[in-house]
Length: 221
Image (cartoon, rainbow, N blue to C red):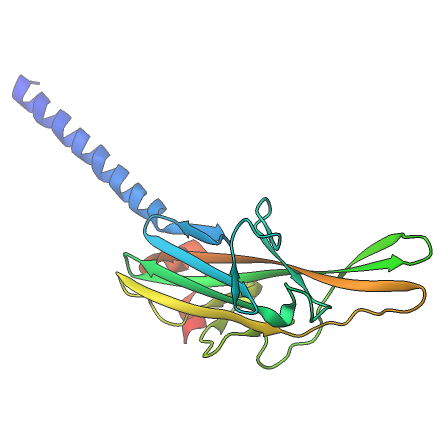
């Protein structure tokens, strides 16, 4: 093999390696899954989440936000508390550089604590929501936001029905209030119910949602 042919072969191999690396990077770049944060930037998409109680926004330093577990802490049984479920509102703003598909998932854990007055003993129980109400998220005490557009899918996911065009912004009013679940109070014990809420937001390149999410296009039809 002469020197010129060898040089051309090396250049071709380097070009091929760069092309493969670029393809892999493009695929990885748009496969994004993030749990709820008050604000975060994931490269091609910027997601800003406004969480408020009674119109007063909270941030990551709030006592009603668990930074370690990325959970919003909500009082589901006392309508007078600062973080009452009836006072909760959540709005998500998504700005993307490329055409994208979007889905969200609410992970809710309702925890009932019963404190016995005579002994101070506290028993904890995880509760299940068995009713599906109109205007509420599926099997949830959380009400949907105004002009709610999401499509309910399998596995608890909710899908935005349209493609978010490149260099566009989408504002999703996810939650607007909720139903108070009153705990029991008598001479023996006092019950309180806490909702721990996590929001998963997924933004993927529009032409890759089927392979990344493992679904067909029927959810959007």
